Length: 467
Image (cartoon, rainbow, N blue to C red; front, side, top):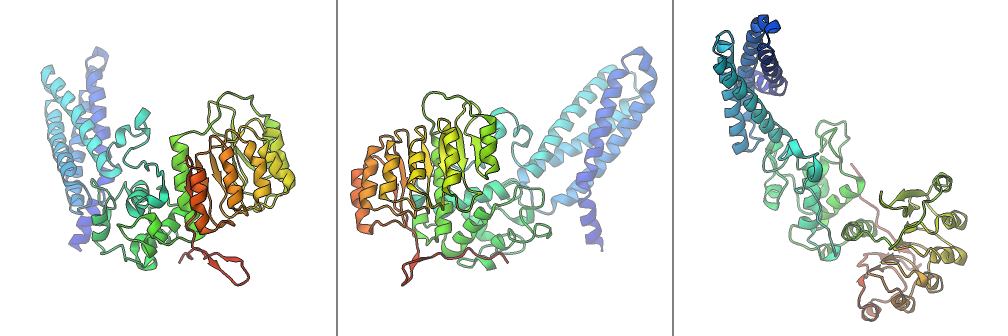
């Protein structure tokens, strides 16, 4: 019973801690007004404000001391926050005593000290609860916290599965509560040793058993569940990020590279997207020069057809087009691209079965620098229409019908830098010849793990079912 009462009192700290801030800042404002003759009678109000500020400061110190026993906070920052809070309570008591005294010098010294201590103590409290640099996180260059920025992955297959893929994800989505400065539940997630150690409730990682690992189980709980992580109101893991976490726990370890861990097509696609994002971050992939702005009515027409159309940057009129909302794009829908031909630079058009006329239209969009046309009916003959795209730098041809002969033609694209193949009509022994011909192009040959049936169709392994 006593332990429960003490625990309850400790959890009152976030509520109590705001009271001294308000009372003491009010006392400082009233003390400043006191210097004017017409406000000479407010001395009793100053004394009351200092008194309430001092009492609530001592109450906050007691509740904070009880809360600190949880062991969830960085000891160094916690100790400094504690002593600053105690100092504030003592100095505010001195402010109460000297508020009636005529010595103006002491009132100024105490007032200045109270203000400084309120700022320092409050800042340290914010650091404990919200993480390092919370005060300036939204200002200028600090708007993006470097500690959670995911570093670009130039070649995802060569990346370390945990260090380069999973750990940045954990730091970004879980780092506010489970870092070196704050360990909610006694848990840190900013390093291998901490993940292995677990928290107060025990282990969170079971090698090869995602469904038995608390690290995975907590993120797939219903968001309304108390144990769901991250907590309600915090940035949540996306479905793709959850799949990556399941993939790593089920198949990997802390030392393996991505290429050493089996991947089904869906997992491969998500991992390639990390590499694509890195490529986009390293270079904007925009053609030189400018174009006129596309008509608002034209963009509205495309959007009504289900096509996602967004500017690639606020400084240009170039557009990115994505057919992700259209399960299977047809020729009539693709024909709408003719209305934004000069502005179109990035195109994502997967799972489409198009005619030669549609492929020819895409090939006429001269400013295209980036194309993802995976899982389409593109073959060598259709690919020939794309060879006129002299600005093209990125091309995803995964699960298309091209052959080695077709891939060899891509040497005609002078600016091509990245090429994604796999699940094509290309034998494994033919990739070396393609790479030799396209020696300046970074080629990812797929490394897909797909089972071939007798009927020569492809069986895709289903994504894990959320429990």
